[in-house]
Image (cartoon, one colour):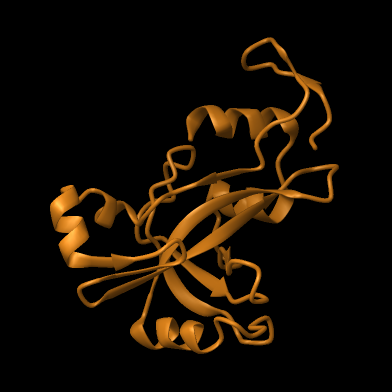
Length: 164
C-alpha cells in the first residue's frame, strides 16, 4: 500500500489510497437510456459491442513514484473490428508477444482535460488473467502521457482520486 503522507490538498494524513478507478462502460454507451443500452449494446465486464463499434476494457497504468506499483485507470478502448477479433482469438492465451494495436480512448478522464474521448493510444494484450494495457504514444505531450512515463507522487495520486 502507499506510504502515509500529509496531503497538501486536504491537510489530512492519509495511510493508503485506492489504486484504481474504473468505468462501467464506454461513455457513449453508458449515456444511452437504459432500455436502449440493453437492446442496442452487447456487453460484459470485459467487452462491448454497440452497432459496428467495438470496445475492450483495459488498464491505463500510471506508475506511483517510489513504489513498485501503479494507479490504474480502468477505461474502455475503442478498437477496429479486426483488433477485437484478434483479442477474442487470444482471450485465453498469452498475448504479450502480440504487437500493440491502435485504439481510441472511450472514456473521459476528468483530471486530464486535454485527454478525452477519441484520444489515440495503443492497446497491448496481456496474459489471460490480466486486462490489456493502454500506452500513450511517444510523441504525446499531454499531462497524462507525461505522468504515464514519469509517474506520480502521493499528493497527485490523492488529487486524481478527488477529481475522478
